[in-house]
Amino acid sequence: MGLFDFFKKKKVGEIVKAKKELIIDEIELRTREEIKSIDNESEKLGEKAVFITKDVVPLLKERVKVLKEVNLDKRREDQKLKIIIKENLSFYISHLEKLIENLEKINKSKDFKDCADKVNLIFEDFLKNSAKNYEKATILIGKEFEVINLIFKNMAQELNPLLAQNLENNKKKEKLKLLLEKFKNISEIQLTENQINKSVLSLELEKNNEQEEINKKEQEKQKLVNSKTYQEHKKEKEQIEEEKLDIKREIQDIKTKINLKELAKVYHGHEKKHKVIQRYMDNFDQAINEGNKELDNILKERVLNFSLSAVAERKKKLEEHTNSSELAEKKLEKEIESKSIGLGEIDKKIEEEKVKLTKFSERREALVSEVKKEASEIFS
Image 1 (cartoon, rainbow, N blue to C red):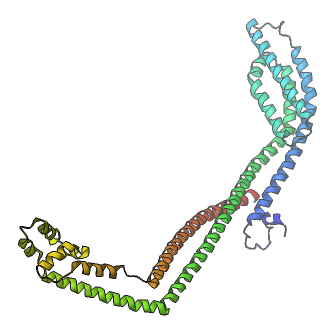
Image 2: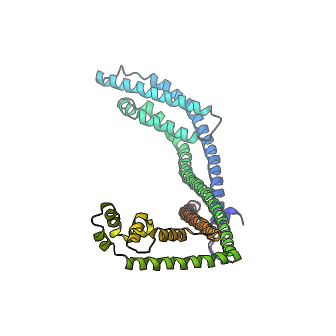
């Protein structure tokens, strides 16, 4: 079955099969071939139009001579009227000579593609420009114009069907050109879709690489956790935590045994020591954290055998304690977290690209539907 068979009507009595949906590529091919066919027909119509006008030119030239010989001097009509008639006759002759000149130019043409349109425009301009002059000139001049009218009438009988067919072809061609413009839009959208798909593919590849890196870091972390060194460091850390609890209990014990408010009263007359005590009176934890030696000395004077500086030093040492396993684990966790955030960003970009792809796909599908509908109407 040929391409154009899709558009033929079924004969009476023929079994009607389910209508086959037009394929977009076939429509584009048919559209281009139809435009080419119209261009070929327009050239033939133009050639015929030129052939018709060639026979008319000599006749019109003869009529120009006749019009120029018209003499109204012996007519009895009002002189002013005759002057108006002569002026308009002169203008009409000028328009007629211009028409002849334009037709002769067309007759010399070797490319007949747009000749039918040009012939139509030439006569449209002539009729529009000469209408008022003709109307006024024919008030007193009749017989000379009858021959001209007959020439135009005979020419129109041959020319008008050609021009009408050419006009119909031009209308159809404009519709076909609009179809081609939509094909261009579809092609541009497909190109954009391909670019987006490539972008998504690249992002998916980047995502897979990042996920592989995360998996490697997870495995590396698991290997670290399962190592003998890590287990030893883990026990060491548990001991450190136990010591921290001991320090905490010791600090709590110190708090219960030292009353800084009472101590401030004792040293009320000793300005320097009183200031030291007042500094920590409302925040004893600060005294312990800083391990103030001046306060240590005051406590010793009161036979309180507590060394805040020693407690602070132990506390600080325990809090700052770390090991290579712990550092390595934290480093791996930080790297995993960073790459996981990057993975989320890639997912976001992929989603954005897919949203764009959906919009372009919907626009392309809408255009394809429009093209199929319009093609069905044009080629039916």
